[in-house]
Length: 538
Image 1: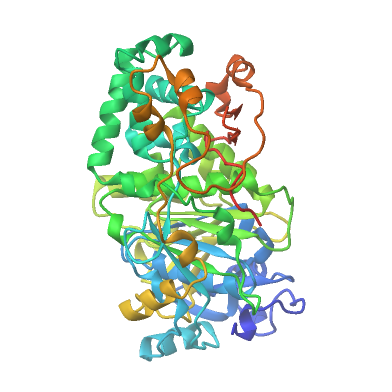
Image 2: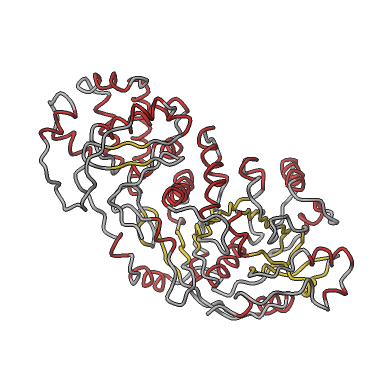
């Protein structure tokens, strides 16, 4: 169960009586973190080389949907910071999604181990440390690794995010969107990569080349580039990530019977060699939530807090349209009660338009061993408010588990910069044992729902059966009425709105709403992702 320090408490005075005896600058900093409402405890103030436990550094719970950044060099404690924040969010009923790159976060479900280091840290910061496990669900992309499989359909993933992982340029990205439009209008469901490859192959064949004229702007040469990119992508093993059952992202909003928020741990250790894919998949999860969740406005606590590890991978070689979509998603999803934390090494890894929206900052130590390191250090210092600290000196001298912090106060204003000795997580700081992890996955009520992949009739089968026909219109007429496997009932056919959407600038807005002739409603979000109406929603 959560300890008394992480639960909502009565309004606190500005500063404690003992804190009032602090040096003047330290007292001013401490006063900036004396919030009256529920807050997460990060640690205690560091000042003039000393830890001052009476000056507690906290972040208001209501401000966690204002997004944040956790940064620092390798080995400085970023992972433990994520764990510390996730534990306290869970204790206050807020679900969390953690991307687990190294496999270190799976231990959050088990009580931590008390040792001399934990006892020393708890004493330093006046933490009442209690070994505590938190409710956790374990996921794995495409079932690669130990976890409940997370898959997306190609249609659900959408052309913009898929263009990112295929490394397509802007023109090719637009062409891929036209291919998606063609498949939609012809009733060719894009479930897995085989379906998409089949559609592109058809469009570049002698039989299908005539179809290109119906979706002007797509050349056979560009279609060929997309086809080659898809083939290379499949050769890297990416096919496992696409298919059905498609993961319902509202599963991430679960809470336990005791009211604590579920910590969803997405294991990425098994796919570390495909960083471009897993970072973009994380963005798909966020984009899908953005599309489905209703507006909430300002809330007392977030609906979900989402940690995007290795965030720089999202922005490397990204198109202008992709960056614009990330910026808009981060800006708008706050009003839906979702907080997003980017986790990376330095603030310069995040585009300025995104960084400007990150109100909560936990900056671990940086190194200055090379001119490039020094340049990154200087840039990082400039992103913080003015403070009495020599931040260049502080940031290069912080120890493991220490950080420079500034957050948004309850009034939405930045707090004073505070060098902070962080608290120790109360759950296991390391991986859960293999047997315990496999047992947790197998016993999850979600495992049976997502474990077994489903391969039903879609574009590939339709095109294979229709070889020799004039085109997909004739194949539709010849196709049997029933699918090969049972499906959920679908909404009635809706008239297409493709012409109106294209005419209004689909590639600038990256949004569309198209009805297919098999009765599937597709509504595009900022990323061009789609939701099929048959998906179960809470």
